Length: 243
Image (cartoon, rainbow, N blue to C red):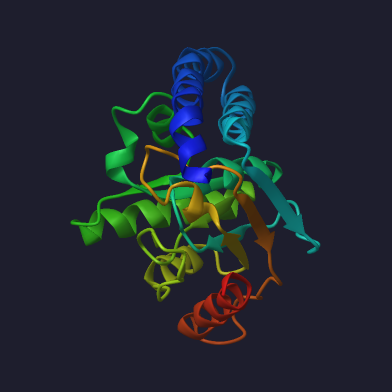
């Protein structure tokens, strides 16, 4: 029944999603060119609120759980499991006050309305997985901005999506690189649950009546153990929540 309803409702949700992307492309451009970073960031926050709101067209739900006292003004490395592209708008919106910047594939920085423009000018790191030197350079530039501006970084340490929801092994190299220039960045695990179910059939049909959660888990102080061990600890905490 849920899949059947998906065939009916998906066209409305998909059209709404891409309409939001198209509408916010010029809004972002004007905000950035005319008013600078602060105005552009507000437009990006609004963009992602509108994007995640399209999930409700399918009667899916989005819940953010945060019982942690996260610091403002201190850089953080927010690491989450990655289940689908649906993960991203809620992550950006929920962590908006921490100026969190994504570590993304360089391919996403072109040809996608709104998303590509934000990746190019928003201050994140767009890495070429085929070019280790370029990837390290981009990460070091981001970590310098984190240190100087108090920004945070968002990263999916699995490196790719888990289409069945099972957490894959976390990779620590990118996090270790960020910590080189920003060694006091707080490590914040986030467990994403059931977003894979919304996209279990691909982009069409999208699934319906899926309760999805984004839960902030206990932060981990850097420097208390080797980076590999700290990332493994974050992975274990996320696995306990995701199952």
